[in-house]
Length: 118
Image (cartoon, rainbow, N blue to C red; front, side, top):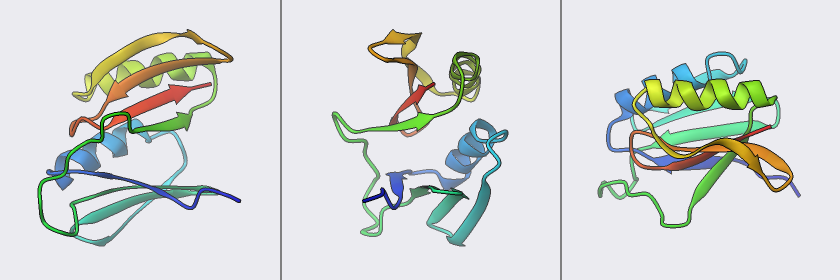
């Protein structure tokens, strides 16, 4: 079984798109917006999206919900953590060895928690 895709909510599509466009700039992903309420970043075996909720209620982040991205090397983890902060994200854990992975944690502009790991 494979994961099909991950979607996180946003209340500001333009800001979310700018954040993830910049965060994923060196990842070789294609961007697709099938509607004004959803944007995808797509690659081989990779599909991530931000969306305004279909029910038109405010997007909220889930307590305990997190999306993990394998970004490459330790240097990539450091670089992307710093970039996410420059883009307005907030740190939830500086780059460090955690169990078998070197990882860092950030929240995007809507408060969605992301893990960046090697």
